[in-house]
Image (cartoon, rainbow, N blue to C red; front, side, top):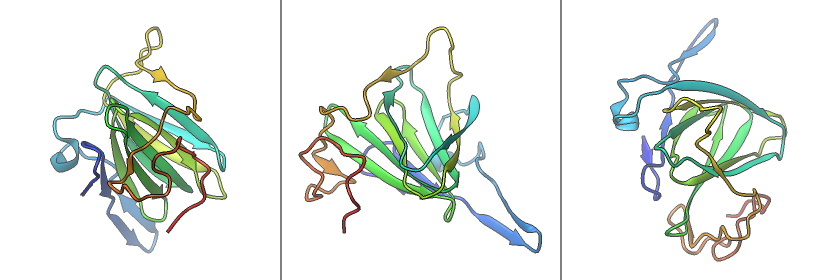
Length: 171
């Protein structure tokens, strides 16, 4: 398990058990306490996003936590803490199955970064309330989302500017 500089954002690599038929993997277990803590999964969802599609920004104010697992393609998953300006960015892909934990108190969103659609299973700790959704939404290109650091780095070239989901990868 890896903890990211934004408190509560964690990644957990999934163990693949291959055999002559293909492979088996446990996607999520309630006894993975290092990752889950006291979280209980209430609902599982699946989502397909076409290449270069951004689904952002939103947050949950009633304590929901999201767990993302990219099953096909690759996705950039970001969480942003408005109070501090810290941003966590994770690239998740089907090539290296990883659970990404994002506390709902952070604005968060995704972008498919593969040239094929991404298929994501995500698990949440609260049931979706159709009549009173726990979502505060912001535009995907909200100019007020200006990170002061990305993954703990203040020298990232994207720091100090409105977040650009389409900025080219940097090294």
